[in-house]
Length: 242
Image (cartoon, rainbow, N blue to C red; front, top):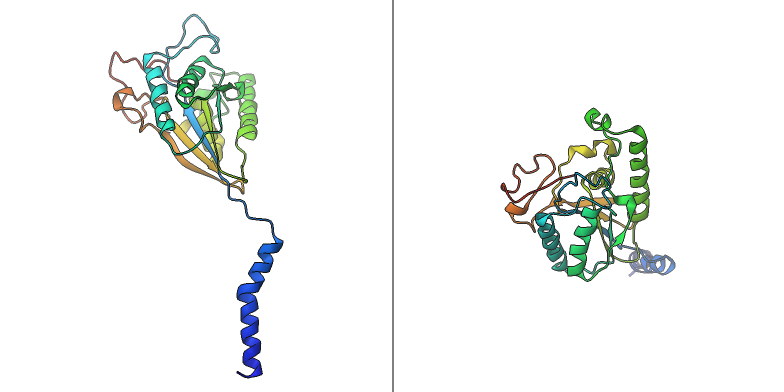
């Protein structure tokens, strides 16, 4: 082997083997933890015609409790460990979270930031039915909830549960997808459905599933609007959907 060949071999060895090792030794480890946010819409409920305060009235009906227990069983069957269970302070969400919490052996913590409201939408029919002040409060609450919960967990995978409402979850999905968040109302979402958003270590997001109702038999599925084209049979009582 002549001198030129020795130089080429030595240079190749350094480039392919020693340089990467040196870079790895001098660099912090790359973090890969993913934050999995499980968004659960409350179960079906009966709108309270006497009590206007949703923190007191608007309890789940029998169908809603069935739905809450079924999604709790689905979550319990997953090969993951849940870190926290948060819920809106509205009755229908609290009761859904309690049904889930019993099965998962978790105590829900209440958070008014994720209760139902109507954020700014690109639909005039939504906007004309709500005061600008209420819409502004809703926008601020959802932005605060986003800043609070939708953070990367780069040191390791984390699985968190949020029991919330149709408008709030649809807004969060629109934001995670980088859409115009005013288009949130273009989604239909089922009661006791599962939506999962993955937040990577670099802050990028993926929608893993939306309004999944695979844990519910067809006769216990209830939707906002037309949904999949069916509702529970007469007598089952889907109740109020919002």
